Image (cartoon, rainbow, N blue to C red; front, side, top):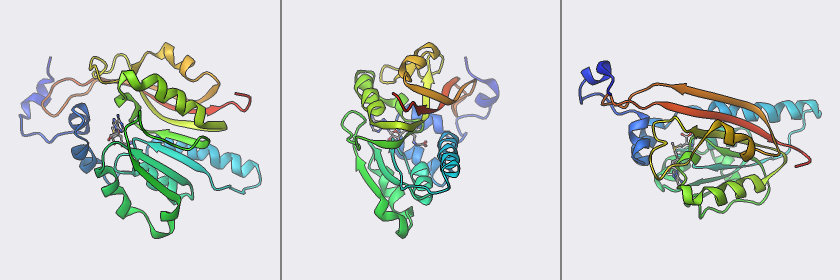
Length: 228
Ligand SMILES: C[S@@+](CC[C@H](N)C(=O)[O-])C[C@H]1O[C@@H](n2cnc3c(N)ncnc32)[C@H](O)[C@@H]1O
């Protein structure tokens, strides 16, 4: 069923982020996203680190984050501006063509970039923050288990995961190259973590042509237990 209001706008309606992401047109997606602020889950995770620093006397160590599927770099730029070291990874080279010119000279020494698929990407063995904003649902199902195991292993005790997973009622859950999760699966995925945010968003939406695109998204910030 199509949304009559959106359909009435006709084929001339501008494409939306989901039109590009739905078909993995990342160059088109980046053009739409460039210049947008950091994702809310990253900002929340950074606030938690800042609270810990304040409680510990305000001295903030230089921390290390991985930004997996960094896109045009909205989250990487935020991390760098706050003094973090960042390993930014993405499968699309245009990601870094857009990101690198926008990195301030004083931040450049703290950024490493690499074009790699999730399955082939290599990141440090011990990180303070693993950030994956709206990227992991695009992991091929055959790669998911290994990628997730490596993510969890690399987060140090007391470190955090920030990002999104997509649910089973999302419109893209039927696509064979996507990885979606039921709510009940999240507790097992995040065994050894405490959720600081687990917000389930479910809402109807449409593509630019009026075709339905229901969203079912889990927005997650989780802290790895120190005894994990
Ligand atoms: C929806 S975008 C999210 C970008 C950015 N993190 C954001 O929040 O806007 C998904 C990103 O994941 C990357 N991506 C998708 N599948 C990938 C894969 N299998 N390996 C590596 N990167 C991938 C895309 O190139 C794209 O930059």
